[in-house]
Amino acid sequence: MGGGASKKKDAEWELEYEGHSKAVLCVAFSPCGARVATGSLDGTALVFNAKSGGNQLTLEGHGDGVACVAFAPGGGLLATGSHDRTARLWDATTGAAAKTLEGHTGHVLGVAFARDGARVATASGDWTCRIWGVGSGTVETFVTGHIDMVICCAFNHDGTRFATGSADKTIKIWNAARLFNGDTKRFDNATGALLLTFEGHEHHVTSVTYDRKGERLLSSSLDSSVRMWDAAKGDEEFKLKHRSGVAGAAFSECETRVLSCCRDKSARLWCLESGKEETKLSGHRKAVNGCAFSAEYVATAGDDEVAKLWLPRNDLLKEFEED
Image (cartoon, rainbow, N blue to C red; front, side, top):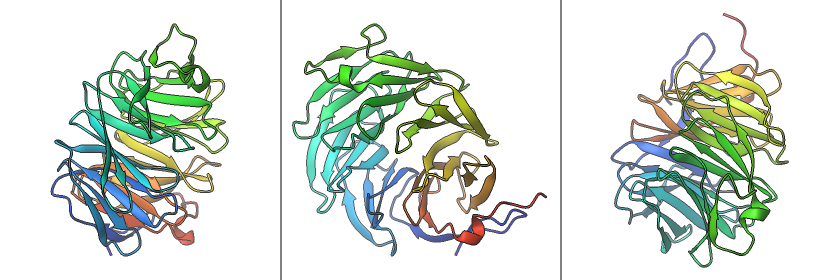
């Protein structure tokens, strides 16, 4: 076991996922929660058995660091995005390379599947987001409008909305029906596809994710905050503050809690109803770059070359007593 005690009863990690030789930049659970995928600056992605920590697959082929990973909704495919300016699709069972998505002129920093698994989006340092047909491996839509790197992206549950987050400090919400009108073309602020721009973050937006109903959007930023937004109006509902830049945030399975990870070497669990921090996950020796929830576990990825699995037990989810 790792991690240490503190006044607020830090959580302890259950096991480590080892095998990378450089910083682990991202982590994702498979839809059923049985597997964990990680991506690293060493240019590989690894797939582990979530409960045992056993290395099941090593995905090699990128020419530079793997910045983002995502399982398709059915769990059969895994997408990776890399600093080599490509994204790749892999058979998540065998590890066989399925498709290479080429065309970005900047690092691929974010990747997200549509809920039906038919499309995958890539966010890039070239200031664009591209949406690809999974079957064809070709670009269906270019999304432009940000004035700096696009770092993250997300579809809502029914596929009607698409969100992008950027180093320009904004989040943009797009009408997916207009994006997918049958023509491969470039969409920007003047086409009618852009619905809303959320402003309020004071630094790079590092993650965006919708709740199940598509009513709220969760975002994180290097401005040390996690924010919740009314997805239809763009109003900020509340803000959670860290002491350092936040690299990512995620909803729990039941959407009663938020997980966030931070450059201060920790991750934290927050109660959505109260907005209070409930559990601090301390154990990484360096900055935490990514985090993910499954129905049972929490996973984190760090600059210390490992990912960690945490079990947020009921006693650790109680409200902290004041110091």
